[in-house]
Image (tube, rainbow, N blue to C red):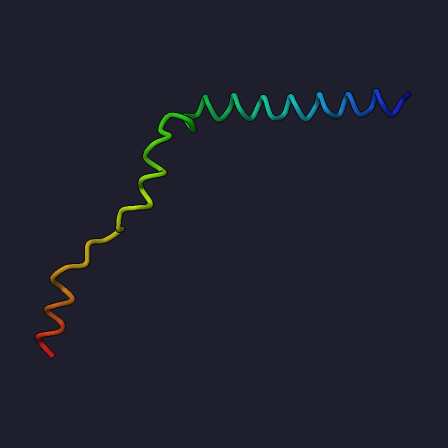
Length: 59
């Protein structure tokens, strides 16, 4: 029976840790923009346009 009390205390402690992490994340703005990170991966980082063609014609 003592192990049951121990497991209940451990589960409540883990639940409180996750609740604190959720409030910390929402307070620091982790959930403000949920659309842009999913779309940002579709865009290229640097536009590579004319510099590569100039190197091709000069050599």
